[in-house]
Image 1 (cartoon, helix red, strand yellow):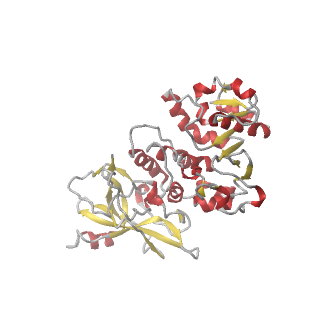
Image 2 (cartoon, helix red, strand yellow):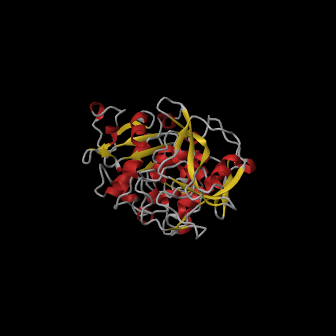
Image 3 (cartoon, helix red, strand yellow):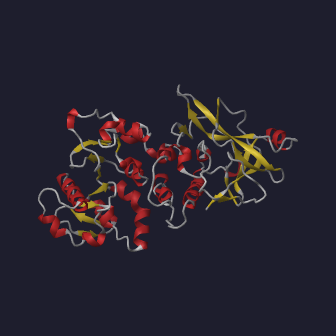
Amino acid sequence: MRCLNTTTFEIREADQAWFKHHGYAILSHRWQQSEVLFDQATRCANDLRRTTGRHANAGMDKILGACITARQLSIEWMWIDSCCINKTYSAELLEALNSMFNWYKDAVVCITFLGDVISRGPTSASPDSPAVFHDERTGKPSVWFTRGWTLQELLAPTKMYFYDANWRFFGSRTQLAVALARITGIARPYLTGERHFRDACIATKMSWMAGRTTTREEDMAYSMAGIFNVSLDAQYGEGRNAFMRLQRALLAKNDESLFAWKMPVAGLPGDHDHRVPIPSVGLGPREWGLLAASPAWFADCGRMTSRGGRGIIRPEGGLGLTPQGISGYIARRDALVTKMFSSRTKSASTNLALNCWEEDAAGNLKAVQVALRPVSRNPAIFVRTECQAYDLVDGIKSTSASAFGTVMQPELY
């Protein structure tokens, strides 16, 4: 790990444990074209030491502002992703991607710089209003809220302080939690520390990513690995398969909210080319497997939970990955036989009740179930159908699933 000395602006390399012991601040920001990279930063120390006031170069000014701010907080070291990682070495970049969440978690404070926000002080918007984070030019929240990587930067640190374009402090994450919750959809207790964000189920955490974007498609998955506490080696070039790999890793969590999503009304985007593991099986316009094609499919899942309801007992460890898709004990045998082996196989559907629940407006938990269409009798194979919705029911009829089946999973490429 490398950090900048906040007084000399010199870069030092040491173990992350050393910087953690001595204390370091970490910067969260939106990248711009003028960012100072590692090879440039090693030559900028003298220039930064001589600078009084703002620097004419926006990238240099950002480093200067971050270091001065950290120094005012009595912190000697500052980590900035743009200049503390040598991205010309792929091995170093991959190591940094895998370590990023912990670097943010272990920092004394995360200094969040919003270069498109101007704070007007106490007379400006209420700290509970999303307007406190608005870009006055657009009337919308800072672009910082639209980026994939900034989600983990919001969640991981113990402390987070927000600064505007003039490096004016305008609140901590705790002080601004109500406004942050309204913009991000993340419940306030997860932002204040009253509850740890890891207590949220998979579908809820996915909903926080819905609507965000990344420059590289793969980063949508890589930026969530730390949030879910899974290891996901970066393989740039794999495209949208990265998100499928992330979901396969999440199967080990045994959190069935992973399967509780809604396909957008527009259906599967035309550029989502896919193949099915059983070529003879065709998918309708509202059909898919149990693993979503994008975090955007979880946009409506912010009220989901995997705790507190009457659960279903699935033998042999629950639902798991097989070559054809997701397999396990999915229904009561009598219900499955009625649907599966009738003369209406092609049009019949059965419900897969999931071990997750959604709160209604009154705070009551409703069980989540999704519709399956049988496509094979022996072995029992299904596809998820009517994917634009899932059903919410007061309770499940049985806590036992005794019929084994597979829900075919298409692969993206």
